[in-house]
Length: 141
Image 1 (cartoon, rainbow, N blue to C red):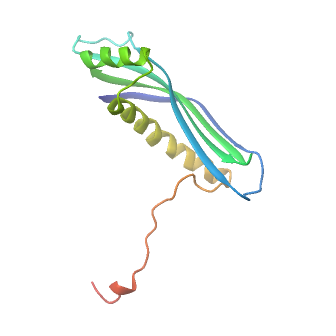
Image 2 (image 1 turned 120 degrees about the vertical axis):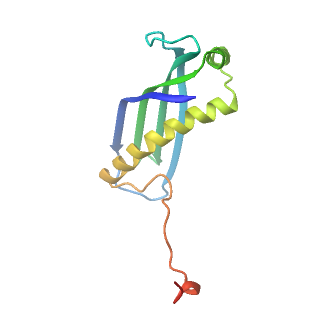
Image 3 (image 1 turned 90 degrees about the vertical axis):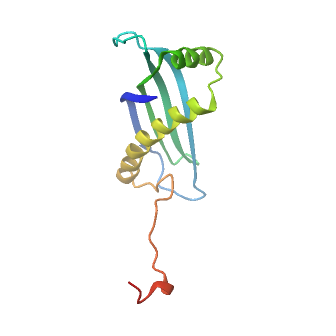
């Protein structure tokens, strides 16, 4: 599976309150539609799928919300593409496909979310890595 194109249709960041008391951050992500992209010429060995998605980050209680919707185009082997479309009709994607799609959406959306959180003066929705000084390493090269 290869990512061919990724684009946002909506990016929303809204701060509703200045209070961070009892703050809880909840995220949700979903695939809204998967269909074949017939406008891209294919050699018959591969299939192009358009995947519409939505990703939300809610700062509760009623503090802020971030929303992203968009579409990505994925290239897959034709046989695999037909299998994915068949699974989608039943709303039962395989774990492998579902995780692959969700990882692309999260990787692209989280970068935008961090930018919006900085601009709206919100805490980040996940912990960033932090380096720590270790006293045991003092004086060692």
